Length: 184
Image (cartoon, rainbow, N blue to C red; front, side, top):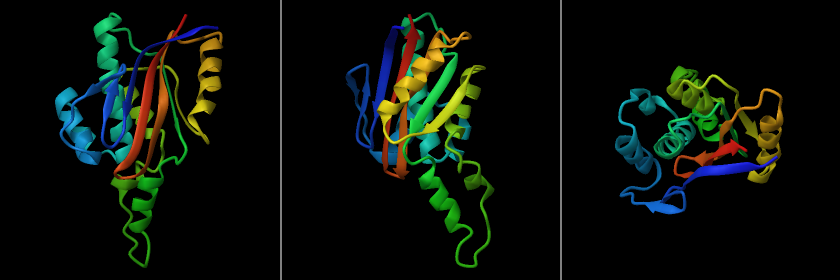
């Protein structure tokens, strides 16, 4: 089976590369994610309640899907498959701080993001994607390819998948590399 990547984005704390071309940014880290939100989205206030992992995946998806819409007749992915190595460790640590050392005041706002698959749900809700949404915890990005190939090979195969690596181990230590993949 042949897969074709139509668009790709990579976001690090200091840079954004879309289809091999850098996008100019003024800020770094979490501030850069807010800058990108204001530039490319601006109409999804729930963004400001999200943890860093969800913001990272959401912004990467927004930018690459806008690129997809410009060149592929606005066809949306029918599946979202993301992965990383550390699950939601940054937010898990933040949540743990709200229940440690006798200060048992758990934060519901933080608890929501103690599951890494929340980012796939946010993207699916925003773009009305009703197909598969999965988030895997893997050792490395190469382990994601067979999962994507298997998903594309199923009898009810999606035509398009938004997929990639979305890692956030600390507030300003993150990397997202998302692709739109077509089943040829």
